[in-house]
Image 1 (cartoon, rainbow, N blue to C red):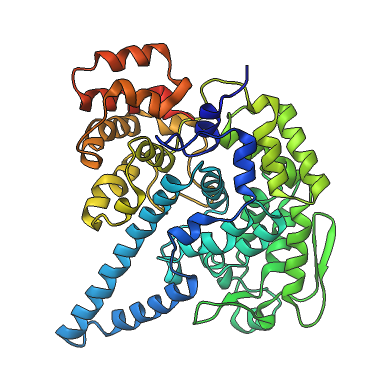
Image 2 (spheres, helix red, strand yellow):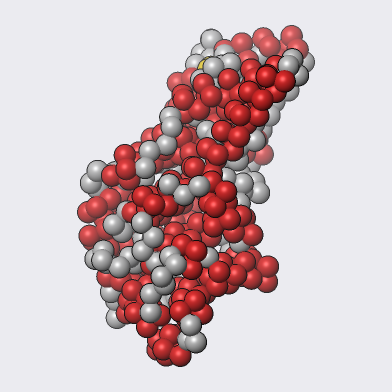
Length: 453
């Protein structure tokens, strides 16, 4: 047996939507190679715009004690920032709702988690959505080396991992200030973003990488800057390869190590396994991972080719229960099944959006742009369906659908709209026996068949 179009759309996309044809993997891959329509249909503000906003926010924050008028101006800009955070969540869900199959959105979510940032400081708060759109989204069907370079050298990543506070101990600035090295970005670059924890690097490699990264900083206007006076002098050796050594140090040395890391077999294995884990199983088929790794190395890290291998390999096409949907994925797929119009969703008032999605996602364990660390959200199904998080899911299923769609569909029709031929016989029977539409729809959405991809 192999996956039907409905099963493939559930497994690799954002779920079935009545009136929209389900797609086989080959059709989804063809769409992925085409234009990105969702980015123009539901656009975010640019990072440059968000930086300008943040500069004004900081100015008003510092002046808020000068007068009542200044305090009110600050409160207004603070409220605008909070609304924008909710708006970014809303648009992200809308893209997943509107995309015909959702594969591109799933890939964006995966890679955004792979290159996790959490927005608390400076330009980061309010800037993460733009960071994802500008560094990750353009490259999900491109080359990993391009994505890696864009993500690591973006101001949001530099700020998140405190790289602008890292100084070469023997640099001009380091010697003058007695400033120290910060290994955060170097460690996560090796452990999480490229070769992986089992990739054969040592603490010496981490330190050498950290020294090579010194010089990266951010201007007051939120732009990436390279400051040679902060950079550790001399060459650094990372995984047996020498980088740098020019005087003054140059950003091109950092770009060189990123290109090399992107094409290491350890990186290909680590990320291929992580992709298969995310879409299929926490114990992915070794043959599938090996095939993805081989394609990665043969194509120079072409993510379109790697994704095609993932979606068409026999091990990926065996029907059966998949991974537990993360809350963002679950809410998006539920709204697709309920036929909530994306255009109506994005026009919903912010207080209601908080109750319908923002707070429920947090209760389910996935606070918006709030992963617990640089390793992103959970990668273990059990973490998503613990007692409290599962109760939050069930509560959402039983209460929110009737708010999203007051005239709920007949559960007997809805179960087929939501799951197609993936609906198990016992759930079909349960849909016919539901005492009310609210109960029936809630039962279907809360079922293991719908909660898993």
